[in-house]
Length: 475
Length: 55
Image (cartoon, chains in turn orange, purple):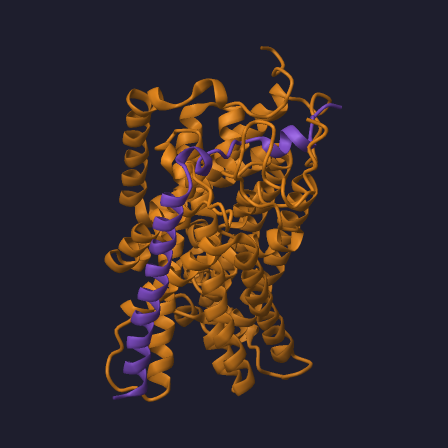
C-alpha cells in the first residue's frame, strides 16, 4: 500500500481497493471556494430580496445575519466531518458512515433534488435575463426563452462531462467577476464617492422599519436562507481535491466569509436605493440598484455579474448533483450503472447525462417559485441532519480517536444553534408554503419506505464502510 | 430576419450539437471499455493510500 505513488500521473485515481478508473484529483482550495461561493452568489443577485417583502429591510438584515450564523455552523460542521470523510457524495457519505443507510439514502436524495432544482431555477433565470437584454436592445417580439434555458443546461452539462478542472476553473473566473462587481457597486455608491445617493434614513424609518412587526422577521428567515443556500456543496469535491484535509476546510470557511461580506454589502446598497415595497418583489435587485445609480459602467458590470452568477450556480449544481448521484450508484443505493467514471475525462459521465433531462423537465414545466421552494426545503432537511450527524460523530469518534483536518470550536454549541435555527426556518417556511413543506416530507417518507423494503436488498452491505477508522466508541 | 431570432436558432443549434456530442461520446465509451473497468471506482481509495486516521 505504501509503495503506491499517488502523485504519479499514471497511478492518479487508482488504488489498492481495485479502482482502475477513478475521479481525477486536480482541484485546489480556490476551486473549492469557487464551487461553494459560485453556487450561492446568485442568491445575492436575486432571491434574497423576497425576505424584504416578508418583513421589511430591517427584518431582511436580521434574517441575513441569523442565516449567516446558521450557515457558519453548517460550514464549520461540514469542514470537520468532510476533512475526515473525503469522498464524493459529501453529506451522503458522512451519513452512511456516521448514522446509517436509511439516513444516507435520504440525505443523498436531499442533495440531488436541492441541486437539480436550483440548477433548473438558474436556467430559467438565464432565459429571463436574455429576454430582458433582447427587450432592452429593441427586440419587439417576444423571445422564446426555452432555447436559452436548454442551452444553459446542456452547455454546462457538456462542460462538466469534459472534466472537473476546466469546469471549476470556469466557475472560479465567473464567480470572482460576480463578487468583484458587488464590491464595485458598494464602493461607487458609498457616501464618500456619491454623496446623497443612499437614503437609508428616509427609506427605513416610520412604518417602513418593521411593516409586519416581529413576525415579519421570522417570516423573512425563509428567503434569508437564499443569501447562503448551497455553501455546503463544497464537500462534493472531496474526492477530486489534491489535499482534502486542507483544501476543504480552507475553501469552505473562506467561502462563508466571502458570502457574509457579499450579503451584507448587497443588503446595504439595495436597502439604501429602493423602498422596501419595490425591493421586496424585484426580479434582479442588484441590477436594478446599478440602474438607479445612473452609471452605465455599473449597469454593464452588474448585468454581466448577474448572468455570470447564474451560470456559476447552475455549473456548481450540476457538479454536486452528479457526484451525489454517482456516489449512491457506486454503493448500489441506486443502480450500480450510475457509478461509472469516464476513462478519459475522469468524470461521473452517466450521472451527469442522466440528470440533464430531469433538470430540463423541472425548468420547462414547473413554476420558478415552486422550484425554488422545493430546493430550499430539500436543503433545509439536509441542514437538520448535520447537527445530529455532528453530535454522533464526536460521540462515536472523539477528538483523540481519529485525525481530523479541521476541528470546529465550541462543540456542541454550533450543532445546537444550527438545530434551533432550522426549527425557526421550518416555521417560517410553513407560514408561506405549508402545503409544499408537507408534500415534500411525504415524498421523502414514501422514498424511504421504497428504500427500506425494496432497494436495500441490492446494497453491498459489507463494502459500505470504507474509512480506515477505529471501531466507534461504545461498540 | 431579426438578430435575436437568429440568436435563438443558434442557441437551439449549439444545444443540439453539444447534446449529440455527449451522447456520441457516451456510446463510444460504453462500447470501447468493459463495464467492469468503467464501474471499478471504489470509495475510500484516497484514504487507503494517504490517510490512516491514527493519532
